Length: 118
Image (cartoon, rainbow, N blue to C red; front, side):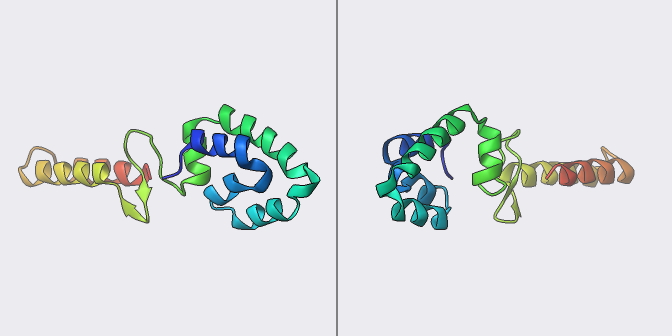
């Protein structure tokens, strides 16, 4: 999982050669930074990207660069699979239904709410 502060530090110190772009998975942009590093334009752009990364929220960074790994309450989709927290919640909900603590309608409604929060 990529880190916002690490990306900002890479952009500040090595942004003129595009290291932060490679770190963020933007390889084509990284190659362009390398090709044009002699013009100092990538360094200027990297300076402003550093500011942008520092001002960006962690949630916005995760959505943009960590491909859907969201830190909202520990829930999210990682690699197309349910996170462990969400799977555990669904398992506990199923146990309550099997024990007769909640009705089928309650079970289905809560299950849909959990799955829709992806």
